[in-house]
Length: 119
Image (cartoon, rainbow, N blue to C red; front, side, top):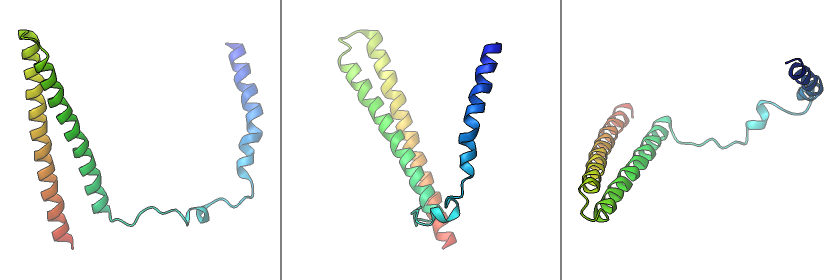
């Protein structure tokens, strides 16, 4: 325990000069971020883009689930357990896809309504 504390304090003693160099007189500050292009889209468009990307990713996941369930169903070889499991996966993925499409429609409606009311 004492050796660990001694190593820690020794490290901190050696690291302090490096931390003190952060207070140099170089040109650091607000002027350095003048040339950063943060984008020109409005907040509403940015939020709509994030929602569309998230729902698109979830749609891909649901589609992969349906494909996985279909391949598993085709390769089950008549085994009742594997066939039942595959049907459950396809059903769950299809329900998820329906929920995702409904969420997309609702979010699209809300965002369009907000766009029409605020402009």
